[in-house]
Length: 411
Ligand SMILES: [Fe+2]
Ligand SMILES: [Fe+2]
Image (cartoon, rainbow, N blue to C red):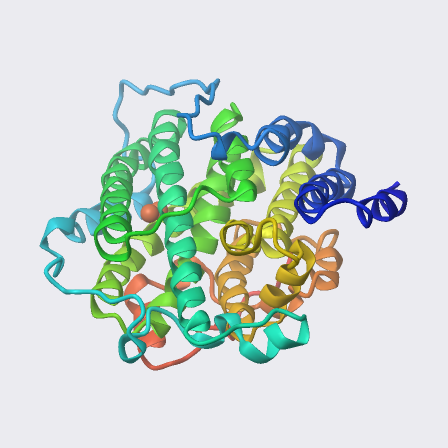
């Protein structure tokens, strides 16, 4: 089917071609999903995000939540490690208003670069037939960094609302107390990312379609553990890697300071997700329910790895021009800085999927085939605090790429 569509698209004007390409990509996502339960649970979100592009409509989005709120009138201390996290979270609070907001930021200043220039590499661009002139590369890095920070901001809004939901629905009382600190953390993250984008960069992008799909899927899923898996493990895990990448590379001092604080909060959030899910997945789920979560996690990892291609920047720079989405995709895939960015994101994510027991021998070959086998043995959240992560990033290490490797993959 796609081959014949491909033939038709070649005779269409470039603007229409690009729209057809987007629809073909959406169709590919549907056909790639192997597990029918995953397809059923993701399909409505995929239609809203990829085809209807609800996140880009310019209107507020309503997502109907159907989970139940879990009360406990005995107030038990039912999870010692979550309680410790709660104590650490109270001590780790900070005020976003106190960052050095008087720092003046020039996004095009090469001596205080926001992000590495090779994120959009000149050689890689020339190879795919995209030409840059004069300060284009610097301007493109400004666009890409603003795009990345915009996706962080949208992800943080998702995290804020998801943290409220999981605080309602989690069965552990110590988890609810801990969750109350995460709600405050996420509110503060929304505040600082939004302020940085609007006051310092003056540029913001709409939510990426794939990120919208994931947020929509977990907000509307009634099962509390799916919310945890989607937000605390997948979105937060990837975000932690992405924050680490930018923290390590940015030369802009305000952004670096902001990320230093945010990373310490996020490390606790992912740790909490691992604690909540590890035991639940091992003891509470049927084999079918567990298999569905294994496949869901893999599909989301793949969605973020293969589809998180900064198309919103492409739309800004090249929509209606002779540069195609495919050329752009190749540029993003082949630029060394973007490769390091993806690498560090999955270095953070995959060990946590292992840690909660979803990297089973059944799904490991899928990850290996998608080039993610190299991340199997890295350090998971309970073995790596925010402070340790920052120390490694400061030393220039690839954020525990090798990790401790002391646990065997599998579940
Ligand atoms: Fe956050
Ligand atoms: Fe978070």
